[in-house]
Image (tube, rainbow over all chains, first blue to last red; front, top):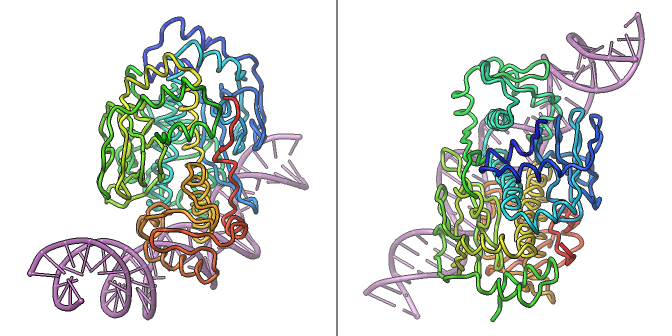
Length: 241
Length: 241
DNA sequence: CGAGGATTTGAGCTGGATCAAAATAGGTGG
DNA sequence: CCACCTATTTTGATCCAGCTCAAATCCTCG
């Protein structure tokens, strides 16, 4: 049994065998959610948190007149709404960008962990802190970089994060990226039309190849330089926490 | 003795007497930091977290060529870098926007809390989740609202947050806001020149009065409407966590 | 083969940037 | 109390990255 959560946490700190056991027992129920459906509804008060087992999901906020900003994109092993455990009321929605397989983790189980497993609690807390670090990086790239630079940055981030959970093909530097240009624009804060133009420019400069839902990065160093990408903010290294 | 941290946490959930005691004992040392100095240095590995006792501070990231984005602004009672406890390495800097009085909280004390005080741990965790919720809201307002709307939103947020720690004058709806227009621009992601023009427009429409380091909001409802401000994301209400 | 979504192209427009300079406001030392 | 220095705010003129609107093409899949 592959356990993407344990895999992800093991990137952050050594896990004891019993801790892995505890993690494995968290998921009370598995469900499938079709693309464009909400995994979690804005304003709801969930009694469980949602662990993404497979697929891509996005948190989003809407303006009063319905324009959407995707504030993060999640992949296997990510808790898309671990924060609902303590925030109680959802202040945003979470949508399935592809067909998603999700595991439901009762808040009661999380409370139990917080009472009896301080080390695991710190690691779960840590994953929400990394979410915050990503938000901050997005704030920077959104406001201060050109949309091409910002896109380059985001592609690098996706690569690193998918790589961490074993979903990157390290040989040809490619990852699954089954999004539409419109969805990417909602994450970048730009229009579909402009996403398209940015991609054309990137293609012309052979910075990336993106088709059939797969993104390939022929020259990592150049892409990372253009996107001013420094992976430090992802905190993907194992140390005692 | 006024304890701004206990005051803030008490807005989120009932605190036991002994918990307040524990919180009071956290600060090992108090220091003063002058404006424009770093409270926490980017890339450092702090051995303590910084509780802001008095003053205004801002987290910031820089682009490679030195442009700055302020990713959050903190006031009394805020932990400006509680996350350094688990992230270990700072992925951004924290600067004093005014003269700041800070309390240093050793990470060892935080580890102890996480081992022995599950409820307090959840509340501290929660404060970092609220930081994340604010980041998401900023992502939305930055990308989808006009700069005037975004500014209105930010002013509403400041008012609510300062009000929660007793720093707002509820009578005339005013708060301390000792920032320069340049600093505000760094938080909004716009230039000083444009901040100035936005403020002129807001003044002309008597949405706000801002001078002598104090912001007054003559008509809350109008400002909140323009900024599409809904305080839900601040999660400022007491409930069992 | 047809239909609805996704991508692409084109033409103009605009919010906010840039650059440069002037006016003000604080703060400091004499 | 004044003269001076520096940071901040304000004004003006120009520019451009990314938006809007509209239509065409291309997939994909029933």
